[in-house]
Length: 386
Image 1: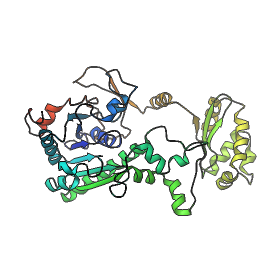
Image 2: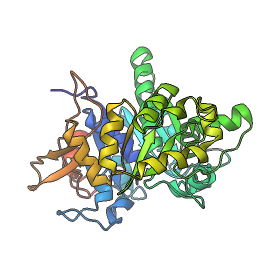
Image 3: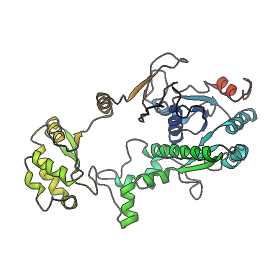
Image 4: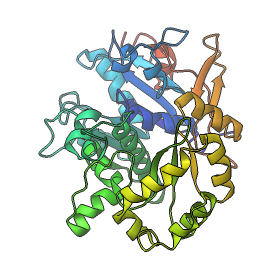
């Protein structure tokens, strides 16, 4: 079945995570994505291991590069530069995350490409924008630190998220921007330049935390596993292991109090409303945990869930996958790649479509694996760029 983006050609001049994640999402939906890599080492993440999969590829690289075709091009080489130029002039979408200004000398910057290919949607991903922050390196950890995320994460010191969350959020924002620009092109026939930064994506994604600064002048700090505006909404210790309670309203709290045998808590002025519970968080946590410690987490999960109150265990990632499988979410797919035998397991695209589902056509490519096919796609001979 054709994908929603079937027939779309994407020139992927990005590397590491944010850009490749965006282009993989487009590829899942049927777009033909040509991944341009530097000769020799290729994308940095090809060497970011361990762990490595059975075929020797770094699992980091595998996470964001399925359904793509790889070609290695040295932009300082005239023949390779010609191939890159032809790709940019042919593409419907071009995604790049080079240092601002670095592509100008190759004629691959937004202004130059759009002059030759006015229908192209040209997406630039930076760390801190193309203005005053143009010289700053766009590393996820750096943006987590300077953008404020680490200041609200952790228990006794600022802590980074356990995954490159800012890169992923930026990739999602880039994808939304690209799809919106394609819709505009369908109406007008004109492409446009889409820009997204890691810092801007993070700040948009800080939602309520950054809104407290902008709207109320309140600068939040880290609370560990607690929530600044909701209680009880954190980790609690049961008899055998920790678990979470995520009580979002007064009705849920009243039901929780009944299950715990402490119905009086729901009418106690200290805990009757969410605002009061936040103000008396430490007292409330102590009272709840004194009850939870009497029984195991499995018992509490069953009875609290039956009462309609969100709760659950703290799983590791493998256990999280098992949960998704048990719920019928099919979180893992196996790619049958005719180019290379073997089992290629990937995390599935999370969006389900009734008519144009995501497809898993090829495993993450080896470096320069698809040069002949890419050159043919561009109408070039096999000697071009060699």
